[in-house]
Length: 504
Image 1 (spheres, one colour):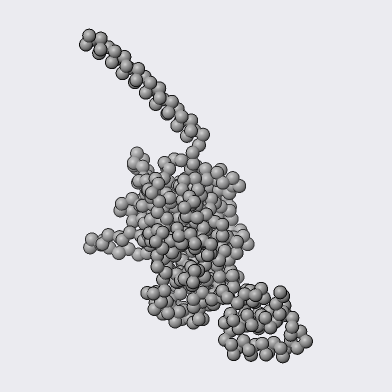
Image 2 (tube, one colour):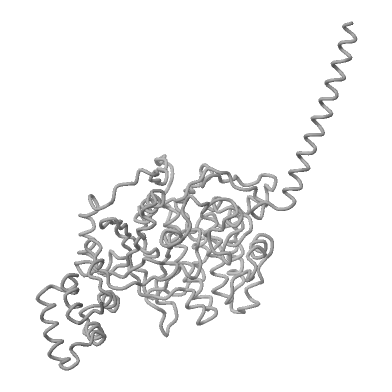
């Protein structure tokens, strides 16, 4: 049955998108202005959108006969802003007027107890991140059987889009973008988390760059692991080997060698490597190891040195080349141990800051909403699922009284390699400790990733997965073992006969 204007008007009343009085006044205005064309549903829907009674997304749903699903708790859904891989991301408005982004866990995935538990666990960890250079998560909510995460809505442009248009950035702009990303990453590190997919597409510049380039933009780190499997219809479930050996987690253009071997071996230094690759791309106009073959690309990350920056951009200072080299060291021990150390080294190349990054707390329009959130936080959060534990980072040991506080981003000499690299030079016989199950070496200050696993990682020299040589060596070992067993059994039998003769 084909819907009429009267049908859609009735659906609008049921949807509660407009107060009844406003809806009736709108319909009377439509009949007065449309006159002979008042019966055209297409014109009616377009007229409502043009006069901002409803959004285009809302009008399309009404025209298809939907009167429900326009609200999630206190939020009115305005538009769908994520398609394809990021299915289930919507622009919405709180009843107090604050515009937000909402990630909705598809009901088909929410029925999986393990996936639901993982969604709630990772969402709670995202709620702990409160930094001007990290996209803010505000609330974990539930409306009927729908789980959702309310996040900061950003009007900006990704670094990927900027590089696609401009190819490469001047050193001052490229350094500033990565410096802010390192500042956000240091906050992530302080919470005991690892991002594992830092790339230009996950760095948003807010507001969008204008005529002055990116110098007036704030960098926001996006996608803290919630968008990959949780919001893909038909995506991998958490028990399907998402972080097992041989499964890539990340983007090969910017992935560290140890993460390519085993994603469970990635720690904060892997994220530093990825931002080193991002800085290389911003300065040169291409990733450090462009390759259409993923296996070849991962091998190049582990074995090759990238082409010098000056071959692409003569304006790059020699000291900046050294910093990029240390960020992209093959051995994690040779990199800056924390994002703060890398950011401190970049400080000397920063241009004058036009305006410091701002956080949502500094926006006057956010105050009433944040106050409402504080009152809701005690009772609005869904209960944990019984299907799995809710993991939280370990509690750091209490201070001893001898330690002194350090600035968040300490300065570092650009001509002096990190301590980890100097240690590796003088003590080559002492390999770096192997991180297993996401845990960090004692005393390193590293946390763990949001996905803890107990299977040990591959040895440091492996490129990931079993090779033909592995099978040859395995069967050679089996053959040698059988031969040794046969020789041993023969000798035992011979000795047994000799002893029996001596006894006789």
